[in-house]
Image 1: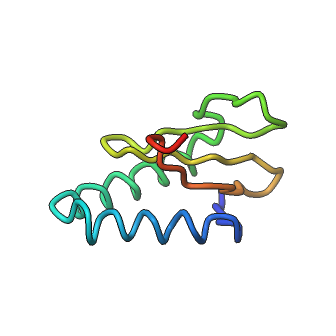
Image 2: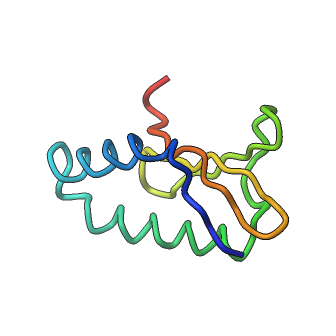
Length: 89
């Protein structure tokens, strides 16, 4: 299933990039690998994430990082609503 990143993820990606370039550069390679692995898992298993209770949104942790996908499954694709830093509440 195709994954579409919505405009609402732009600031999230800026923070993800900043975090792994400036704050924790030693984790950058592993984080990128985990990000891609989680994206692949989501493509193959769209309902793998936990329902959030907010509409039809689901949450899927990006393993070995402090980040999660917030997404919703549509008929033909998956919409990534946010890529959240779980430490920020």
